[in-house]
Every structure is written in structure tokens, then in C-alpha cells.
Amino acid sequence: MVLDLLQTRGLSPSRLGLALVLLVFGVVTTALENPDWPTLLLFGSATVFFLAAAFRQFREHALYELCFAVVMTVWGVALYVGGNEPRFLVLLFLGGGLVGTALELVNYWQGTTYGRLA
Image (cartoon, rainbow, N blue to C red; front, side):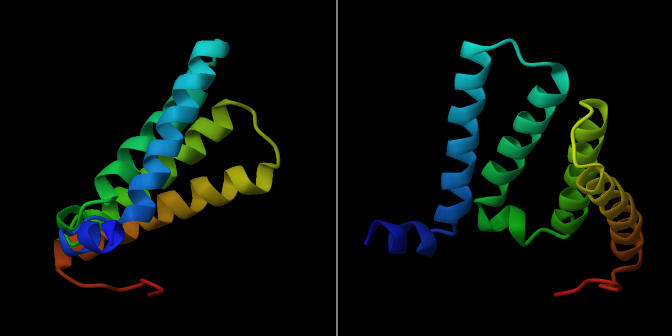
């Protein structure tokens, strides 16, 4: 019943829940350890993106796909600078984010949806 109420108001409970889990995990990690800035960037950008994506107005906005591609690029940069393994995952985020950002910029400027998988 509560989930239906949230969904009728345009909220995505799964995205909102993920944002809250990321927020709690980020706060606990920061309190218990002294994480480096790539870790904080990764948790911060993921939390903000999923919190914003919980709202239908953000998901239906023309810049949503571009924001997702930019966030993916930020995640790739944070993983690369942090020296994380496996490198394939880092390159996947960086490459996918950069190609997606370029593609979505063109789509936004032209008003098209070229290259989208869904």
C-alpha cells in the first residue's frame, strides 16, 4: 500500500531505497575510516544521482540520459584514480561514460534518440 502511494506520486521506491542505502553506507564508511576522495566522489555522486532519479520529473526530463552518462564517466574516473581492480570494469565505465556522454549531447542538441539501446 505504501509502495503504491509512492509510485502514484511519481517516486521510485527502489531508487529511493538504493539512495538511502548508499547514503548510510557512505556515512558509516566515513565515520569508521578515512576514505580517500575517489571513494567519497563515487558514493556522493551515486547517492545524489539515485536520489534525483527517484523522482519521475527527473527521469522524464530531456537531460536525464545525459546526466546518467556523465555520472557513469565520473564513476569511471573515480575508479581509475583509486586504482581499483579489475581494470576491465574501470575501462567499461570510462569508455561507456565518455561515448554515452558524447552520444547524449548530440541527441539532446538534435532532439533525437540515436544509439539508445532501450
